[in-house]
Length: 414
Image 1 (tube, helix red, strand yellow):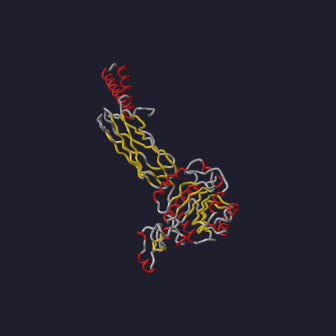
Image 2 (spheres, rainbow, N blue to C red; image 1 turned 90 degrees about the vertical axis):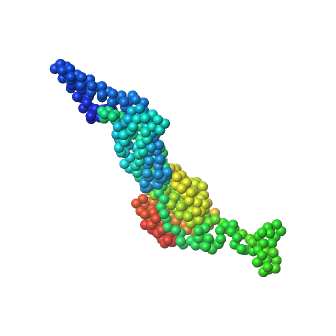
Image 3 (cartoon, helix red, strand yellow; image 1 turned 30 degrees about the horizontal axis):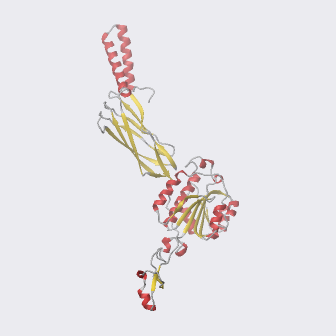
């Protein structure tokens, strides 16, 4: 509610009523007294129509898309339902935008007809905003400044409540892993060499009691003069691992306070989700871990696009954690040789590279992405077998990824 309920026109009418009253009393002019009383009544009635007449308002807010991505645009649609016995004049509206969302969320509120029917009057509003920072942001409430039919009085009031908008990390389209064909790559690669899991690869074996007659391979049986059955060649799903080092010492202090506060950490989160999306697209079963071994999401099956969307939503609120040693990841990765291993971190020095030096030998493609490496840390990482690259906030993530993946080990991209 505004402090002064009168518009410029209403203030002028009130001032004129006061002047007429003073002049009428001073010069004994009855007509001026009549004008003064009339103006005063109109001004008071105008205020009463806004503040005393019952009025029911409801707003419905919708986002398109439902989940925004950092750096992307979002369309906001508002449907305002108004029930009032009196019509409303043209006014102004504004939707409250939180930090992390930018745009011109204001405009002219149209005239509204009176009505107490089942539907009342409906006003459709819309605007486009830009999601700047990751997180869950509260959009609203809607603020409307209305005036009376004479334009003498005004009232600012809030309609409805705020609605949370989920802003997921930016998903960057990273280049393919063309260097890993056959059994070293994901199912998108191995499909060219072997049929899918559970498929009939026409590998006959001798018939054993209990085998279904439907599995008899008649051609092989005729060729060998004994019953042969088809045997399925079971294939294990290739696995990959993406590690996001959330240790507080790696990042700026703002990264632990709220999502979207530290540009470096935002780049790392975007790189993590994007790397997972690429590996899933390649057909890998991808595990997403913290550097302390904590599982950040359920393992994602190859080609599961819906799970990628769920991961992006889950990572909308990820922040840093208290520091811990990466021993769990080292033990996990050292148990057996795995597929690609993508390790994403912030500030990293020589001591950290020494701790991670034995991981590359257990991965078919070890990739190290660092936001802020110190000294010759990346050179040491490349010497240890990592495909290392810098992913600074202002750099092109896709280019850094491609350079690290395509150029192979013992190469540093700065």
